[in-house]
Image 1 (cartoon, rainbow, N blue to C red):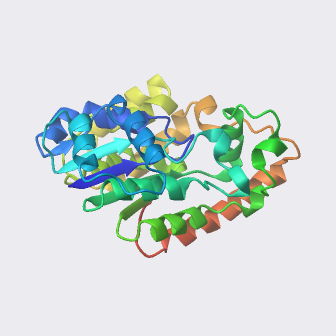
Image 2: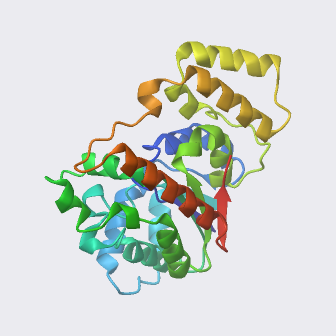
Amino acid sequence: MQIVFHIGANCTDNDRLLKSMLKNADGFAQQGVKVPGPSKYRRLIRETIQALGSAQPGPDTREILLDAILDDEQCNRLVMSHSKFMCIQRRIFENSIFYEIAEQKLEGLARLFPNDELEIFLAIRNPATFIPAIYDGSGVDTYSEFMRGIDPMDLRWSDLVARIRTILPNAALTVWCNEDTPLIWAQLIRELAGVDPLTRITGGFDLLSTIMSPDGMKRFVAYLKANPPQTEQQKRRIIAAFLERYAVEDEVEDEIDLPGWTQATVAHLSRLYDEDVDRIARMQGVNFIAP
């Protein structure tokens, strides 16, 4: 079976991708793809991995899990999503290591489904906005305590991606930038489901509708009907043009207020992120989705 897990990262799409997947659950099920609700697996998988520790699961553990998740139904591809799968926000820099607990979680996942085809999906985000967002929701009292001595300038998503490749060398790994999601949303839905790129889906503009004004969305839909794009790239250029004019400022601009951070800090972090993204896009074994 193909076991697909969208593991976040934290503070990326806020479960919107999962909600769009669930809108298409019935249609995907007809193609052998199951998208269960998160209550079916999030706590179950987390607690099972925690209970395992470093031990091997019992011979019937996989079947028990799948029966509970799928309600005894059959499928060829199981799609799950949990933005906090690796850890909650306050633990992201635990022991001064970026997502230190990723090894434990992903190794546990591999032991639960040893003979299945694992696919991991990961969204990354510019540290200039990622760090303020995760700190804001962490519940940690001070910024310095939250960072655990890590210099933001040293944060590299490519290091995490390399670790995932080492932990799960046989798993397919798909990565994209959270900043690009309005342009690639429909593709993400189809790739998670593993369906044909031309498969009709519902919710391909779900994210777009949250960051574009109602008038802009109305004009955008009308434009697409009058001028149907012939290619995915053409559609993305249209989306970008409408976002440039009709984006809701509060939804696309992040407020950054951290001790010692300046505009120069944000600009430098953004440059480092661009370099890191280029590095990830060239990594062997990574399916990098770009606009």
